[in-house]
Length: 285
Image (cartoon, rainbow, N blue to C red; front, side, top):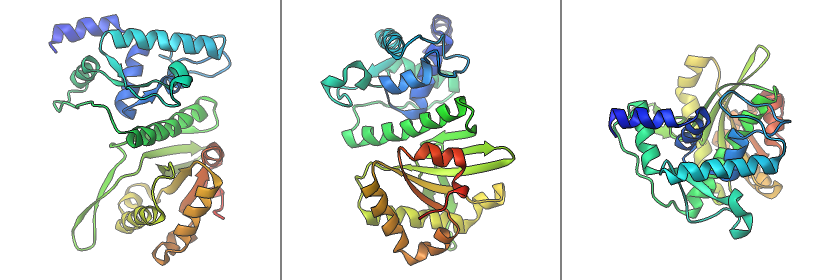
């Protein structure tokens, strides 16, 4: 995309248009409903500059959302996936969007990124997990907008991934779904967040927890920040919550982190309360 084309395209886009494209770049895929929550506030919701005017009702906001998304789609800035979340009955709210060819080139030029990112139809499991992580990120934004937390930093994949060395020099990767730093008064809370859709067996969860243990043992985060983050698994229901808690408790190599109240397993409904209160203040059962 040539400079003149980029400049012309940028002039034709609103601040909200660009914010939507950036959200899709960061989160990789979003439903219409998630985009509505991020960028089309209703009148009783706090909102930020760039989100456009507020709407009287959620229905009015939803109509405005699909109108803007359809316009961006017509210019190949975004594209919809074939699979809808919730099926046909979900209507436009269940449409899943990702960056289109033009949108990808525009943002790549803006960010000075030479590496082209290819977008194809992802698998259903990938989309489900991506949207679950995006939903948690948006819940953090909403808590910040309502003044319940101060959101100092939020990283999605792959920005939130961490690399470290084991004692014998082998390089390892830690791949959380999100990393966040929130503040409450004079206190900061650091969190690695795992969006769990109950699709992985308990041994896989334990292996991931052991990777956190190895990262903690490297001391990298503690050297920079003076603390190690809480690790929060966010699960769909209490049955899954009990299963993950039992699996983590049964692994002897995790006992010192469990004693330090590092691991938390909460349902999606409990997640905002844990964030607002600060995970360090909520004991793990």
